[in-house]
Amino acid sequence: MMKCPKCLSELVPSTLEGYQTLSEHVCHPNDESPLRYTYVCPNGCHDGFYGMWGSLYGSFGSKPELWYAVNSFNWNVENWDLWEKVYKFDKIMEKFKDFILRMETD
Image (cartoon, rainbow, N blue to C red):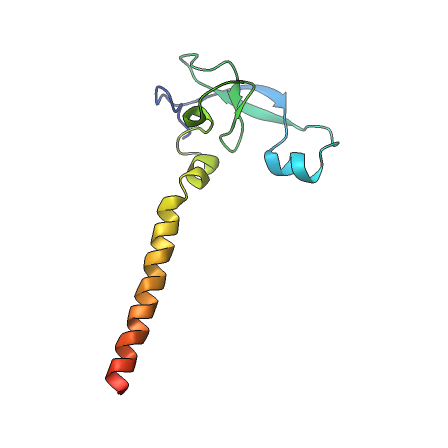
């Protein structure tokens, strides 16, 4: 469940609103925004709402650490450095394995 990044309360479903995701806005900027569920903090931490992927809408001037709901898709992408480290570790292990195989054949 998505959580508010400020108070860590579970976000609750709110009204249907018309909004575009970033990729929709880039690919089809003139299309009508579809109605989608929104999610809000029950403690009223923000002026805006969180969309289906966890991005904050309508709360201009908010701090970057509040832009994505915790445990949302966008929050996971924003914290991608962890996955990058895992990927780099896998690549290092592949090189190490190749090195060991060469040592065994020499």
